[in-house]
Image (tube, rainbow, N blue to C red):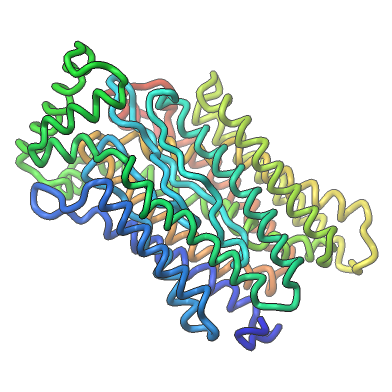
Length: 481
């Protein structure tokens, strides 16, 4: 605040702008990243990651070096634009960490009889926490595609706790200096630098992209290396033939992907479901809670200092614990649909109870933490539990498995754009709502949770364990669709 001469009067609005502008950049990057060039695409995986890493570094440098408010916003928008999908690899979508750092292969190379999964879901808290949350992971045969989404979200949440601790250390070490937020921005350049200098040397190119560009020998070598099988192994030959056949079918199509999305009613309905799920995930307000947890704790009656840091840290640890729990829940008998329904009920109870408690606590002082304040804190933790067993990871799983294979990357890109646009709006609105209507903000979020639970009950079928071929039939044949 001192660096940019920001006063308390306009701090909430400016804080909302700083959060929202990053999400606007992410939305722009996600939207434009799937523009193809004719029937072959310009970029493979390695070029996509390199461009994204450079965009990330440029944006971070601008943020770390700025001394006025406008360059900070420009840097944050550029940093957001690094969100790029590799459209050329319909079986393997890469995501340069949406906010923080190193690349993660969100799906392994194609394995027959498995649907593809990608999860670009990450969380962050405030401007001083913009350092790398994750180490890079190349995930291949040692993790099944069905287990990967939960595992990756677990890695993400674990990394989040690390950067919270590091950021808190800088805040304590430079409590009166602007280096408390500059150093995290400088440190987050390290993963991007490592990727550009070292990571791309060991990263294989997309098999499907190589086949599309008639580099058959190289694509077969990469497939053999990933599967750890000889080139002449029957499984390698069979899988390679399947990929070639899939690419040939795409080339023979007489209609474009845009035509299929717009005029195929089944695909259009699947895309609407995915867009609504991403929209509801953000209006359920987990990122609003993450970004503005300190403001919420102040509303409850915890005014800064070690107590606020402890409460916020415990909130993150609870999220991490129940993301690991979701690892076992989503593919159990509960499945995707029940997990979302239970998640909606828990978050609705937590928010509405929190709102009622805060409405009865108008006389809070900084030294008066009573039973209502303790109950309010517990409701925030209950929200974290409810969200992370359902709406946190499950939405990304569903949105990556319900679309036809040939247009999956485009559909995931569109639904992800909806996620970022909604997040930008919620990031801008939440601090203003907390300032203008106070405890009624929680009641609004509680009502939204009830509404999205009704949507899931009426319109979302169970997709657990289904093959890609059956996804369209199930989503089209659901009783309410």
